[in-house]
Figure (spheres, one colour):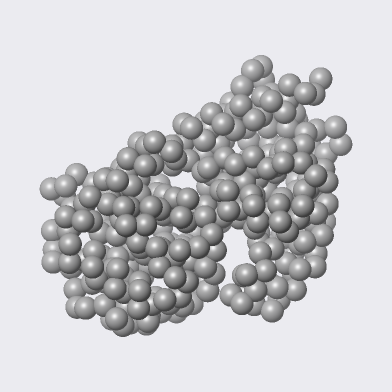
Length: 337
């Protein structure tokens, strides 16, 4: 970034978008996150002063509440890490969430889009969905999320899980949107020796899961996640909707095959039959079948893991993502005095 340009990024904590913007902060000089608790969104006007007294040449944030921290004469870049107004999610959300999404959040997003100088999305699926639903006046540029492939690496083979048990990892919030309610039915269809280890996501809340082949490993700090992936044999990702699929990409970087839902952005990330398997939404029989197949074929797990690692190195590195955002920031700033 030329000169001493200051970029601020107001962001709610406890989600994958926050992780990505923290990575940008660590790599781009002058880029600073202004973090806030998600509970502040219960009273959105409380966001009006967020970062207001910090110098800023550019604001880069997500669209949901950007209207409240946008500033006059300072360019605004919005990044859709997902599309929370997606009507498909209504069946997997509470009544209160649906009312919120279809009323005030929809209004806030529309107001933010009117102020945006540039809009990006983390997948073509997300970009197309936003175009169809919100019809923004400017085009949407796709910048895939990037993985630090020097941090997320495959485990040295002779240190790999040497037990006869197969560890299937589930990462994410324990919500219906992430498919957590299907973990028990999937576990019931797995043979002995195949266990599902699940985290409670970045926020330690969610449903209670009770089955002898399900084991909670708690809320894991981001810096410890490579160890968690490396101790697993595959990733289970039965999500309903994803803007990108950060956990899947991290697992791929660690050389794991992925059994995921055939929906939203995931076919852009996971090559069915090469890096894992894509199953219909909620088809617990299909998920259990593919997990069992991989459990019984260690050579295929290794081949798929190597394929995934190579794909991350080719298409989804942190360096590539940072470079694209830096180019975007310079492009927008060059248009301003």
